[in-house]
Length: 379
Image 1 (cartoon, helix red, strand yellow):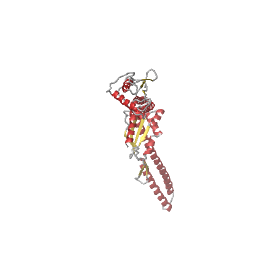
Image 2 (tube, one colour; image 1 turned 60 degrees about the vertical axis):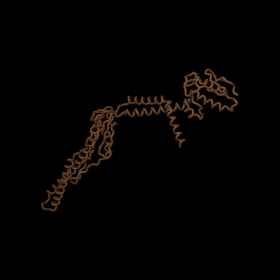
Image 3 (cartoon, helix red, strand yellow; image 1 turned 90 degrees about the horizontal axis):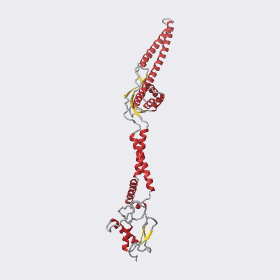
Image 4 (cartoon, helix red, strand yellow; image 1 turned 135 degrees about the vertical axis):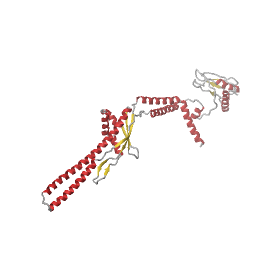
């Protein structure tokens, strides 16, 4: 368990080192993503959305032949929502607004309908390039739907009235024929009694149909009503500033982290003990805390931290060379840069006082050459 915790800690530390060392790439990615988002916000078409709510009520479209009974059409709100977005409704709304064909097509494309659960409400939303057009469009679409629904119901009722009138006309014709036939019969005859019964039956049917026709003609059609008129939008709904900036920043940050990871992978410089331990299995003998300028040479005091570091390194080197036939220490050259000033004199002086280790020093203007430190030859 401790090993696993240590491994996880090392991975987290690697990420922290990656971000700290390549923070410019991360920042550049973030700025680039936000810049692209701002550019999108400045160039994208602005859209406003206005919404109105309708209460859809059942419509009585049929009257039963039993006096006093009427049937109402059951409401299917999914079907009604499709009727709101139909081309006929959009065309009627466009005609009411006096729109051109292109504007009418844009109005039809911008209409959407939602149905709240457990209700008889239709929420109609219209998108447009200006707030006023969106408000007027939503109101016109809602009214056009109600007008078409009422017209459809009235046409259905008118068809019933016409059907009843056709039956009434037929019965009247039969009644006239039977009445003329009865006038030609002898009073008291059996045929006349039968004709009188037929006349009574036809008269009763005509009375029933006339009453039913009156009921159908008196039906009041209520397709629904607007319960929430469309209000003027106060802010655009698209593009959404918060969403655009968040998405741009997230994508830019992701790109910046990716660039930082790529740079970290390509970076082979060792900047400290942590890098050395993470990338190699080479043990660290000592750390020299003081940073020097390029080509700076300093002879440090024996009690300084640098001297103690050199002393530790000397002890480790000399102890490892006890059994070596050729006691030579190679001081590798490093590129000129921060903290690469010459510390060799301090180390060589310490070694030479012990008189045990010859030293090889870097020469800045050419290859590495060797020289012996002052002191006696090793025994």
